[in-house]
Amino acid sequence: MNKKYFFLGTFVFLLFTISGCSLSEIHKDPAPKACTEEAKICPNGTTVGRTGPQCEFATCPIVENKNSIPRENEKIFTDPVENIRFLYVDPFPNQFITAQSWPPSVTISDEKFFCQEGGFQIQASGQTTKKVLGEKPYCLQMQSEGAAGSIYTTFTYTTVKNEKLITFRFVLRFVQCVNYDDPRKTDCTQEQDSFDPNALVLRMEQTLQLILVP
Image 1 (cartoon, rainbow, N blue to C red):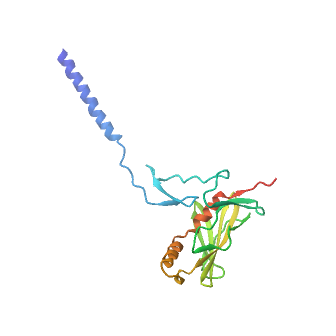
Image 2 (cartoon, rainbow, N blue to C red):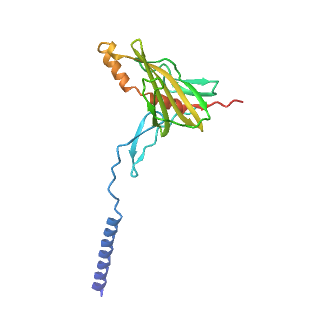
Image 3 (tube, helix red, strand yellow):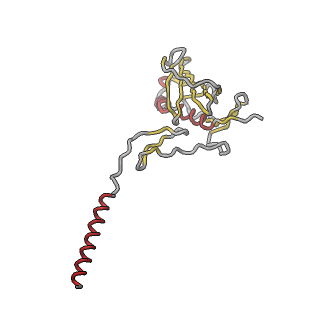
């Protein structure tokens, strides 16, 4: 009688053991999925990639609010005409690129966002291109002309914020690097090749705030 129960118990134990192994194989986590090497531009100009099991974009760094202390080399610009304020870099951070109108002029209107691509940068009407910066659509117009060994480029960025059409406009002077001897020629070329005005505009747009007028 004892042998009977012993063999029965052993059979039940083996049955549960085999069943448990089978279930563990069924519920075994799938192999990790490789994420694509895409990048998203954040409001502060940095980029983040896809991560995690769902390959979602990582969280962008939080941009400081109006009560935060401005970052190094940033100042608060207040425009009493448009009733706005925003943070901008001052002094301008480049040696071979200088700002001729800085901080940018900003206009706000109730017009609808529209961007018709076309043209050429050296034409009077400039070149217009669409961009997506910080997950927002931008319309960029660039118009350049040469004078006294330099190139002067007018940048006009337009986007939508708080259901308003926001336009940033500024002029930058790019010296012609061929006029220098090395090592300044190389320094000039490297600086101009790596210069990214998009990051400057993103920072200003993201920190732009309407001033409540009593």
